[in-house]
Image (cartoon, rainbow, N blue to C red):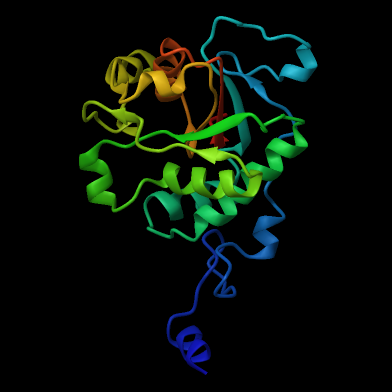
Length: 229
Protein backbone atom coordinates (compact mmCIF):
# COMPACT_ATOMS: atom_id res chain seq x y z
CA UNK A 1 0.00 0.00 0.00
CA UNK A 2 2.81 2.41 0.92
CA UNK A 3 4.62 1.79 -2.39
CA UNK A 4 1.37 2.36 -4.27
CA UNK A 5 0.87 5.71 -2.54
CA UNK A 6 4.47 6.73 -3.27
CA UNK A 7 4.01 5.85 -6.95
CA UNK A 8 0.82 7.89 -7.11
CA UNK A 9 2.28 10.95 -5.38
CA UNK A 10 5.83 10.79 -6.75
CA UNK A 11 5.69 8.78 -9.99
CA UNK A 12 9.04 7.86 -11.51
CA UNK A 13 9.38 8.94 -15.12
CA UNK A 14 11.64 7.80 -17.94
CA UNK A 15 14.80 9.90 -18.05
CA UNK A 16 14.54 10.05 -21.83
CA UNK A 17 10.89 10.39 -22.92
CA UNK A 18 9.43 11.41 -19.52
CA UNK A 19 6.66 8.80 -19.54
CA UNK A 20 5.84 7.00 -16.25
CA UNK A 21 7.90 3.89 -15.45
CA UNK A 22 8.05 1.38 -12.61
CA UNK A 23 9.83 2.42 -9.43
CA UNK A 24 12.70 0.05 -10.20
CA UNK A 25 13.24 1.51 -13.69
CA UNK A 26 14.91 4.71 -14.88
CA UNK A 27 14.29 4.33 -18.62
CA UNK A 28 11.20 2.82 -20.25
CA UNK A 29 11.48 -0.32 -22.36
CA UNK A 30 10.83 1.59 -25.58
CA UNK A 31 13.71 4.00 -24.94
CA UNK A 32 15.96 1.21 -23.70
CA UNK A 33 15.39 -0.65 -26.97
CA UNK A 34 16.69 2.42 -28.83
CA UNK A 35 20.15 2.10 -27.25
CA UNK A 36 22.51 0.99 -29.98
CA UNK A 37 25.33 -0.97 -28.30
CA UNK A 38 28.76 -1.28 -29.90
CA UNK A 39 30.22 -4.75 -30.35
CA UNK A 40 33.93 -3.89 -30.49
CA UNK A 41 36.66 -2.18 -28.54
CA UNK A 42 38.32 0.91 -30.03
CA UNK A 43 41.76 2.42 -30.41
CA UNK A 44 41.95 5.04 -27.66
CA UNK A 45 43.55 7.58 -29.95
CA UNK A 46 41.77 7.32 -33.32
CA UNK A 47 38.69 5.26 -32.28
CA UNK A 48 39.25 2.65 -35.01
CA UNK A 49 37.36 -0.56 -34.32
CA UNK A 50 40.09 -2.94 -33.22
CA UNK A 51 38.73 -6.24 -34.57
CA UNK A 52 38.30 -4.67 -38.01
CA UNK A 53 41.94 -3.53 -38.14
CA UNK A 54 43.17 -6.75 -36.47
CA UNK A 55 45.88 -4.72 -34.76
CA UNK A 56 46.25 -1.86 -32.32
CA UNK A 57 46.87 1.16 -34.53
CA UNK A 58 48.63 3.19 -31.83
CA UNK A 59 50.29 0.67 -29.48
CA UNK A 60 52.08 3.39 -27.49
CA UNK A 61 48.78 5.05 -26.53
CA UNK A 62 48.16 4.42 -22.80
CA UNK A 63 44.72 2.81 -23.08
CA UNK A 64 42.29 0.89 -25.26
CA UNK A 65 38.78 2.32 -25.32
CA UNK A 66 35.54 0.52 -24.62
CA UNK A 67 32.38 2.54 -25.30
CA UNK A 68 28.88 1.17 -24.88
CA UNK A 69 27.31 3.60 -27.33
CA UNK A 70 27.54 7.06 -28.89
CA UNK A 71 26.72 10.25 -27.00
CA UNK A 72 24.37 11.18 -29.83
CA UNK A 73 22.09 8.32 -28.72
CA UNK A 74 19.23 10.09 -26.95
CA UNK A 75 18.54 7.35 -24.41
CA UNK A 76 22.18 6.99 -23.38
CA UNK A 77 22.60 10.75 -23.17
CA UNK A 78 19.52 11.00 -20.93
CA UNK A 79 20.85 8.20 -18.72
CA UNK A 80 24.20 9.96 -18.27
CA UNK A 81 22.64 13.34 -17.58
CA UNK A 82 20.16 11.86 -15.12
CA UNK A 83 22.98 10.19 -13.20
CA UNK A 84 25.52 12.98 -13.42
CA UNK A 85 23.40 16.10 -13.04
CA UNK A 86 19.98 14.85 -11.92
CA UNK A 87 21.21 12.88 -8.94
CA UNK A 88 19.39 9.73 -10.11
CA UNK A 89 21.79 7.24 -8.56
CA UNK A 90 19.60 4.33 -9.66
CA UNK A 91 20.76 5.08 -13.21
CA UNK A 92 24.15 3.62 -12.27
CA UNK A 93 22.63 0.14 -11.98
CA UNK A 94 21.43 0.25 -15.59
CA UNK A 95 24.70 1.86 -16.65
CA UNK A 96 26.66 -0.93 -15.02
CA UNK A 97 24.46 -3.54 -16.69
CA UNK A 98 25.04 -1.92 -20.10
CA UNK A 99 28.80 -1.83 -19.50
CA UNK A 100 28.94 -5.47 -18.40
CA UNK A 101 26.82 -6.64 -21.34
CA UNK A 102 28.93 -4.62 -23.76
CA UNK A 103 32.23 -6.01 -22.46
CA UNK A 104 30.88 -9.55 -22.70
CA UNK A 105 29.61 -9.04 -26.25
CA UNK A 106 32.92 -7.46 -27.32
CA UNK A 107 34.74 -10.62 -26.29
CA UNK A 108 36.82 -8.79 -23.68
CA UNK A 109 38.46 -11.11 -21.13
CA UNK A 110 38.01 -9.08 -17.95
CA UNK A 111 38.73 -11.82 -15.42
CA UNK A 112 42.16 -10.50 -14.39
CA UNK A 113 41.21 -6.82 -14.41
CA UNK A 114 40.50 -4.48 -11.51
CA UNK A 115 37.85 -1.78 -11.90
CA UNK A 116 39.13 1.70 -11.04
CA UNK A 117 36.77 4.71 -11.24
CA UNK A 118 38.02 8.02 -12.61
CA UNK A 119 38.04 10.20 -9.48
CA UNK A 120 36.48 13.61 -9.03
CA UNK A 121 38.16 16.38 -7.09
CA UNK A 122 37.11 16.62 -3.45
CA UNK A 123 35.38 19.91 -4.20
CA UNK A 124 33.30 18.55 -7.08
CA UNK A 125 32.39 15.32 -5.31
CA UNK A 126 31.35 17.25 -2.22
CA UNK A 127 29.17 19.54 -4.35
CA UNK A 128 27.57 16.68 -6.30
CA UNK A 129 27.31 14.39 -3.32
CA UNK A 130 28.77 11.39 -5.14
CA UNK A 131 31.09 10.34 -7.95
CA UNK A 132 29.07 8.90 -10.84
CA UNK A 133 32.11 6.95 -12.07
CA UNK A 134 32.42 5.30 -8.65
CA UNK A 135 28.79 4.15 -8.83
CA UNK A 136 29.26 2.82 -12.37
CA UNK A 137 32.47 1.02 -11.40
CA UNK A 138 30.77 -0.57 -8.40
CA UNK A 139 27.82 -1.81 -10.48
CA UNK A 140 30.02 -3.06 -13.32
CA UNK A 141 32.52 -4.82 -11.04
CA UNK A 142 29.72 -6.58 -9.17
CA UNK A 143 28.17 -7.90 -12.38
CA UNK A 144 31.54 -8.98 -13.81
CA UNK A 145 32.63 -10.38 -10.43
CA UNK A 146 35.92 -8.54 -10.47
CA UNK A 147 37.66 -6.45 -7.83
CA UNK A 148 37.08 -2.71 -7.56
CA UNK A 149 39.74 -0.41 -6.14
CA UNK A 150 38.77 3.09 -5.02
CA UNK A 151 40.77 5.78 -3.27
CA UNK A 152 44.16 4.91 -4.74
CA UNK A 153 43.87 6.91 -7.96
CA UNK A 154 42.94 10.42 -6.82
CA UNK A 155 42.78 13.93 -8.22
CA UNK A 156 45.65 15.91 -6.77
CA UNK A 157 44.19 19.23 -7.89
CA UNK A 158 40.82 20.76 -8.70
CA UNK A 159 40.31 21.46 -12.42
CA UNK A 160 37.77 23.29 -14.51
CA UNK A 161 34.94 21.15 -15.97
CA UNK A 162 36.06 19.73 -19.31
CA UNK A 163 32.66 20.55 -20.84
CA UNK A 164 33.47 24.26 -20.62
CA UNK A 165 36.62 23.93 -22.73
CA UNK A 166 36.32 23.87 -26.50
CA UNK A 167 39.72 22.89 -27.89
CA UNK A 168 41.56 19.59 -27.40
CA UNK A 169 44.68 21.48 -26.29
CA UNK A 170 42.74 23.35 -23.60
CA UNK A 171 41.29 20.08 -22.31
CA UNK A 172 44.71 18.41 -22.21
CA UNK A 173 46.28 21.35 -20.38
CA UNK A 174 43.40 21.43 -17.92
CA UNK A 175 43.98 17.86 -16.71
CA UNK A 176 47.76 17.70 -17.07
CA UNK A 177 49.26 16.02 -14.00
CA UNK A 178 45.94 16.22 -12.13
CA UNK A 179 46.00 12.56 -11.02
CA UNK A 180 48.21 10.73 -8.57
CA UNK A 181 48.37 7.32 -6.91
CA UNK A 182 48.45 7.12 -3.13
CA UNK A 183 50.00 3.64 -3.25
CA UNK A 184 51.75 3.14 -6.61
CA UNK A 185 53.30 -0.18 -5.56
CA UNK A 186 49.85 -1.67 -5.13
CA UNK A 187 49.12 -1.17 -8.85
CA UNK A 188 52.37 -2.56 -10.23
CA UNK A 189 51.67 -5.37 -12.69
CA UNK A 190 47.89 -4.90 -12.52
CA UNK A 191 45.40 -4.78 -15.38
CA UNK A 192 42.94 -1.92 -14.96
CA UNK A 193 39.41 -1.36 -16.20
CA UNK A 194 39.23 2.44 -15.96
CA UNK A 195 35.59 3.47 -15.55
CA UNK A 196 34.04 6.82 -16.50
CA UNK A 197 30.67 7.99 -17.78
CA UNK A 198 31.56 9.67 -21.07
CA UNK A 199 34.55 10.69 -23.18
CA UNK A 200 34.85 13.51 -25.71
CA UNK A 201 38.47 14.47 -26.42
CA UNK A 202 39.81 11.61 -24.29
CA UNK A 203 42.08 13.97 -22.34
CA UNK A 204 40.86 12.89 -18.89
CA UNK A 205 41.11 9.17 -19.66
CA UNK A 206 44.53 9.64 -21.23
CA UNK A 207 45.93 11.45 -18.20
CA UNK A 208 44.45 8.92 -15.77
CA UNK A 209 45.78 6.02 -17.86
CA UNK A 210 49.20 7.67 -18.13
CA UNK A 211 49.35 7.94 -14.33
CA UNK A 212 48.44 4.27 -13.97
CA UNK A 213 50.88 3.08 -16.62
CA UNK A 214 53.73 5.11 -15.11
CA UNK A 215 53.19 3.16 -11.87
CA UNK A 216 53.67 -0.16 -13.66
CA UNK A 217 50.12 -1.06 -14.65
CA UNK A 218 50.37 -3.50 -17.57
CA UNK A 219 47.13 -2.84 -19.44
CA UNK A 220 44.46 -0.16 -19.22
CA UNK A 221 41.07 -0.58 -20.87
CA UNK A 222 38.92 2.52 -20.36
CA UNK A 223 35.18 1.85 -20.36
CA UNK A 224 32.56 4.58 -20.78
CA UNK A 225 28.83 4.62 -21.41
CA UNK A 226 29.27 6.88 -24.42
CA UNK A 227 31.89 8.44 -26.63
CA UNK A 228 31.45 11.60 -28.65
CA UNK A 229 30.75 11.22 -32.37
